[in-house]
Length: 183
Ligand code: IMP
Ligand code: MG
Image (cartoon, rainbow, N blue to C red; front, top):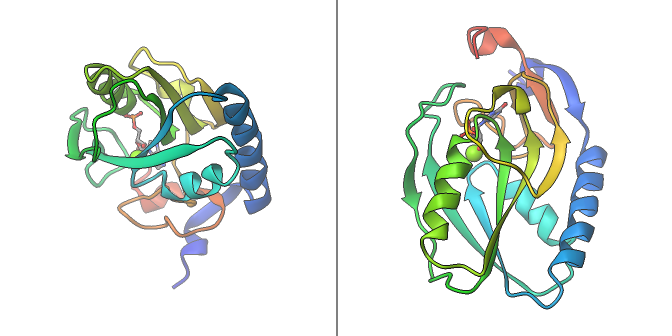
């Protein structure tokens, strides 16, 4: 058994992902000069991306994490978003940069953004490694976008299917027969 055999094709290599982190880190470094930056990672899918991205951010920044449930165990959003783990500290006045693995329907991020805005942060911006615009339902835009991806189910580099494949160092398209061919 080898999880690499469940991948139909590689979409982004390790080198591609490194280059994306570098580009985004440079933009963020430029934009957050003199700000009170708090990077908020949305678990679990963003953990690898955050680890790499933060090494490319050269301004002072704090890091915290939130976890929400939105997908259950399948490949399609349930539409129900719930906070499983909240931030450790108040965010009043802080410049929040939300980090997500992928913006799909947009329901997860729009829920998180509206929740955080009630806590009077200085600003809230959004960075996602991947954007799947074909599936958008919520009215939400990215401030920092890694790569556009087609309407296919991708795994690796933190992204899962049924909690598996997160450890793949690249991004691959999952064979449709693995998730029943529906999305
Ligand atoms: P949204 O609320 O539909 O935007 O869902 C975003 C979340 O769905 C992401 O944080 C991922 O956890 C998950 N997701 C969406 N598309 C994919 C995919 O292609 N592969 C893995 N996870 C995905
Ligand atoms: Mg996620």
